[in-house]
Image (cartoon, rainbow over all chains, first blue to last red; front, top):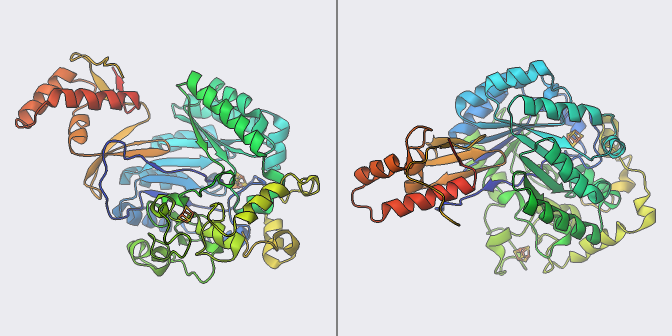
Length: 398
Length: 93
Ligand code: SF4
Ligand code: SF4
């Protein structure tokens, strides 16, 4: 599943500096998925984690432990979480523990029977991914025939009294339909729509030249979104900005080990989705490490917490608290140095890599390259080095 | 922002929102899809009295009794309720 979710720990009323708390727990319960999205955020070598998933009991224990640490928002994600038949059990436990729980789904596998059980179990909301207003593009980008199904599932979610939360990953193939996408959201009664401009990790990075829109397309899309917001206050439209086109990086995950904790299908505990692409890092695993230790004391979580690890230009930068130097994974994947400033930053000596990527995306030859869809076979081919030429410009497997 | 709140109004927690005490943070929070808000001292005190039954006037009286030393409590409460209403944390019943 894509997870461009910005945590909005909206301290709107008043704030106090507190110790870091993993307020947001993302349970990536499986990497198996019936869809094959070109922009999938999952690691490209996910296939090696599909045979050693945590058991129901292990998940329940992880939920309990995380709750003790202060986790409160729970995302149940994947892959497609509904490929597991114990989501209902996990939801019941989450509800008992006092989580606000969210199922992040492609809609595949959400039957009337299951949605009833999830509702009864106390699931708070469902975030459905949609791809376009046209069947062609939906089916192309996911490499599946899922358009009709998603429409049906949207109706079902609404009928069960759930808030309608749509997530649409925005890329070259749907960006010019922004207006129609927003109108569709309104027509199906969406309460929230997250317009997640594609970020380049995982499969998305492999397919970057084919997926990246132009600056002009982005400007138009943003203008359309603002116009929509002004006239449709009932639909909350969240617009995740495309970092490549900014001068400054995003405060990735709201800070390494600040509010986000991810537990992956096989039990690894991560500060962000792609942290395993970093070199010389050993991430704790719930099977053998205490979760409190993992969050507070493990070397991996402490490595990039705060600003101590920084080198120039970040170390002496006046904005260092604002963005915490951007994204470690993006830095490493693109520059080969995890401690370098995020190359998106115009102060970074590597900004040219981002500018080059933007240029590449205008190159008709690169645009026309076949997309590498996310599936088990391609995952194995990438991991084995067979498709090396597609990723040789990156410093590790995305 | 114009005040539309009357002392006779009655509110409940917004649709799809949840209000709860968080022990780990020693704070009340409001939870909703894609986010959460921490509510500090007075904001928590106000919102925990919202139950879909009592009126704003009753909440004001209650808080005046509970915090006799607080000054200008009524306008604080109104300000907080206005904010909460505009954000969808509350709805009018
Ligand atoms: S393939 Fe698509 S639906 Fe499946 S996990 Fe990836 S982004 Fe989500
Ligand atoms: S130099 Fe580093 S800290 Fe400063 S804005 Fe750029 S990435 Fe952020």
